[in-house]
Image (cartoon, rainbow, N blue to C red; front, side, top):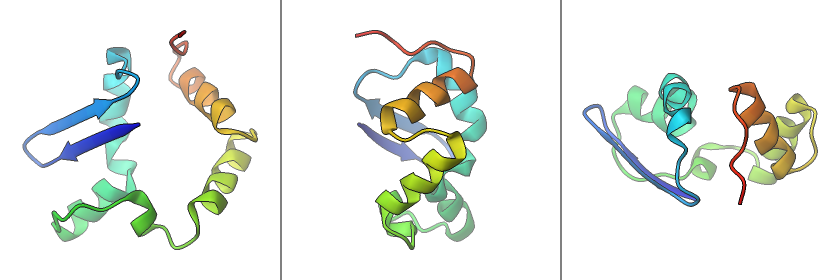
Length: 93
């Protein structure tokens, strides 16, 4: 779960579990691929939005497409694939 505030001057995030600082360089590089950030950059509309506000298809359908591209079937598998893509091991609980 995450809550983020991102402005041209600063950013703030609360995540559960806590954000792994090893991911920060990769996160910083990819943040502008987030549809919410892209929309703000394009419109400068600072009102709060959810990603689901910007996706034309239901989120479930969108996730199925993402999973297919990753070659997985579930969120935990997608998460493990994402960790591996950035060369890190997922945290253990």
